[in-house]
Image (tube, rainbow, N blue to C red; front, side):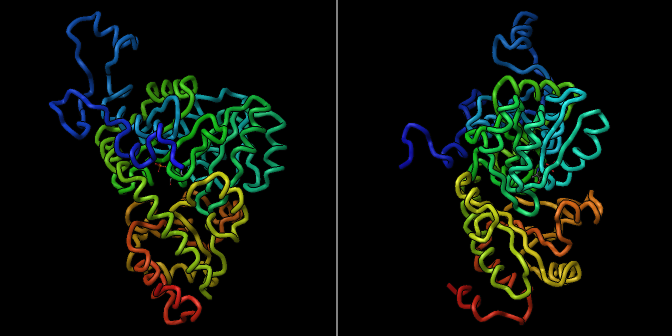
Length: 405
Ligand SMILES: Cc1ncc(COP(=O)(O)O)c(C=O)c1O
């Protein structure tokens, strides 16, 4: 039964961060483009600057529209504090740079998002941070790497693009035993499907560009967790400057009001589509945590309330088959994005792992015949029919019946 003392995720998606304000009763949060905020005298100004009274000083630090967006995510993630960034990659890099000192060690997994992987392989080592990337679903190997000591354990679950799932609570526990800070990228799950903080993570972060905003029209990032840790990430960002733009914050805030409805629809559609794809003769494998055949379906069921709107599948004909198949889709943008109201499809070679070489993708276990399919909010039957016509006349009798249902 729902906890009546705590509003549901739908109510929070609509109302959190939308505090009644004194802007002539405007029912929507205004977009404040002002770079700076004026005060009647130095004493009031100083009180605001030192945090003794509420107020903003300069929009690289804080901004009212950005603060409303950040607050909505904070509440949905059940965090003490949150801060925002210009993009998801800014959230990830700023958080890591804020937490690490030269000589520190980071433990993570092999198939994180391509940009994160590049950060681990190119940028952190250059600054004398040691990085150990473990096989993503080998929990014993990750625990062994953690036991050797680390400052940060960095997780992503489900992963982009192979939808691998790690046992967040188990790994967080192991990390805390060596005094490490646990950071998790919750972009694919969203706070509707999974709350990593409740599983023991210290900081949860998002590319708000994806499902949070949901309309593919604004970039953004956010980090949530304990005030002490969020303050470090905030301070790094306010000085290095990757601030979220107020107009982007407004678009993300507006998008988030329908987060729960979109995710509910995308969870349901993705599940049906994953089952449909698994029955296609041209498909060799489907990756979706909601399928009983998924390697860590039991873990996903334990830590997720829904399995998300992204799946990936492998065509038997490899990259040539992918090249022929994708342009046949009528209801999918072929684009390097995910999490939007429109369905989006593409291979890792031009999307999540465009920065990586074919050899690097192979080493990360990302097959070249893979298609990442981010399910939009279109009617499920139309998406399945679209996939079916893209496969061509070679239909399997067993699935066409299910389609009509
Ligand atoms: C899981 C994940 N994390 C982070 C990012 C980076 O986000 P952004 O493009 O907003 O920098 C992405 C982008 O695709 C992603 O898929």
